Amino acid sequence: MGLDFVPSASLPEKVRGTRIDENRIAPLIHFENVGLRYGMGPEVLRDLTFDIPRRSFQFLTGPSGAGKSTLLRLLFLSLQPTRGLIRTFDRNIATIPREELPMLRRRIGIVFQDFRLLEHLTTYENVALPLRVRGKDELSYRADVIDLLKWVGLGERINVLPPVLSGGEKQRAAIARALIDRPELLLADEPTGNVDPPMARRLLSLFLELNRLGTAVVIATHDLSLMDQVDARRMILSQGRLDIYE
Ligand SMILES: Nc1ncnc2c1ncn2[C@@H]1O[C@H](COP(=O)(O)OP(=O)(O)OP(=O)(O)O)[C@@H](O)[C@H]1O
Image 1: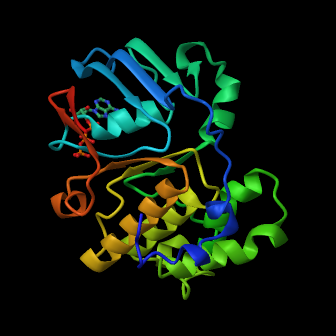
Image 2: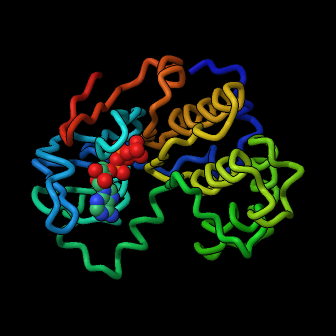
């Protein structure tokens, strides 16, 4: 993908390295007749049957309240469906023991709409957290984290705590944290909602570069101008049902 504004040479090693087994053919995620209701409420998602192929790139869109965040929560294994089958990384999620979920979630990077940065950690420490949790030696990743923070325009904000960051800065820190460990799947909920159009393009280029290197990417967005920049698969939710345009 010839994106000359992506300095792939300056992406951290971990983002550049390869970890995905190319020979596996099962999709990364498989949904079959999935339904979801909250409590005794109506079904918010109905009869969803689709795959997220390995190394794929897709937008998830639809009107407010259509269920995009709910679908991302299912993909992140933080909700169980009320009916139907979900296979994630080749495992039926209904049979995965609860204590194994954190391990599986580590293979997924996620950018929440409300960022969820840890307030007592600096920008640098928040972004480095996935690597620290995996027991990596700080010397092996410090320069990569700083490079990535510079690339998302946070070079001057490395040592501050999240309460001092603007909404757009928090969003970029959350994005950096989601992709620093080069996950197999990246989920992002409105990842460009708080930044200006040039920064949105820059962040999109980062997602595309990550995808080019092997990560499957799902971006939930209302932003038509963002979607129009890439000829990608579109998953459109409407009243709990999903249509896919390849
Ligand atoms: N925890 C919850 N308990 C009950 N209902 C919920 C809960 N979370 C979401 N809902 C409902 O589920 C439906 C889908 O919500 P969801 O947040 O997934 O939509 P969305 O497409 O992400 O919306 P938006 O674009 O506004 O973020 C809405 O009707 C919402 O009110």
